[in-house]
Length: 447
Image 1 (cartoon, rainbow, N blue to C red):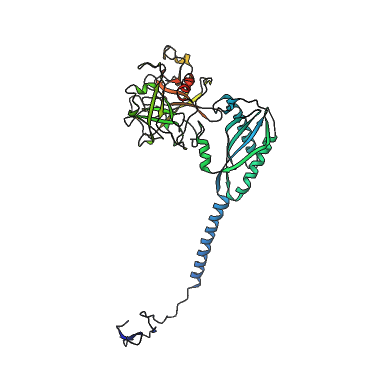
Image 2: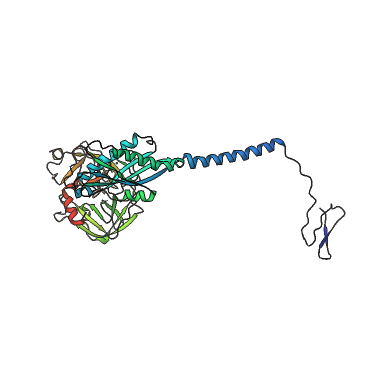
């Protein structure tokens, strides 16, 4: 376009085009000018069709995704409930989560629930059911339960009714030695956070776990939350020993971990699978070493630690179960030892927590002349393999040796104590036998 000259007029701007300019519309009180619109060229039919197809495709994908997420994709739902088991004389041991009575009745009820859901028409949605607590009364026991289901949102509204129906039918079927009251059933949906809190407040449960438990010398790396009771006892900021969380403030470890100093201010405790950086680090208020422990000897090699503040339990950090004093862990039972100890004798130390499957070894076998020649006392137990290879090692001291019961609840069987090097033939690891010190632990902690 050519040059434009602007003159002042009566309340409007007039633009005089030069001779080569085209025609313009003049708007009163306006500074902008707009050229006369030229006729638009129409789009080819194939391009219009392509645009329409694209819009329809986008709409189809959007609707499909909405249908998938709202109706097809499975979501996890959690429930808590309760019901009564009748004709059971009052026994306070049902309240103890580690008692034989509690585990016996809980196992029966969990088996009944599992069978009922597995044989129902919602078996594909069923994930898990557990007895959380038992509350004894005059002539009954109330079982508090926890359930997990995975189902599409579209059928979520109906799932609770179906769960109730299956449980009620199970309670009507009083087969076996138990009599249950179907009218006592209560069921409520709860949030994921509340469901995790319920599980994490119970001992020995694992919100996260590996498909197989396998470790330490000859072992493998542990997953997050797989061994939530494992702690690192640090001296002056460096990993020194292992320990096991048994309550919000107490841990169990080995007495020999405090040979250099017994001053709580020199130690801290942290959790998780990495020793550095420390996760959920806590200071220590008090260290209690067994009164009969003698430095340099192996007997009574046990201590308890009191933290200055409570540990806030979560999926990755919570307590292990302590066995009853009468609990028997027979020879040949599979157990797991965990820790950040050396990968071989005088070898490198790992950053990540290690785990190893071992077996409890008969004390007579462990005390054979070619093995420990009578050095293993009744308050100790051997675990590992007489042929060697897989074993605890330096830096694992004080850490846990654990065993799952038939309900997959984990118990502290032993505390890493002593041995000859690591993984040597006829020299398996020797552990503090926790059942032998169960009453001592109670006397010091109240647990």
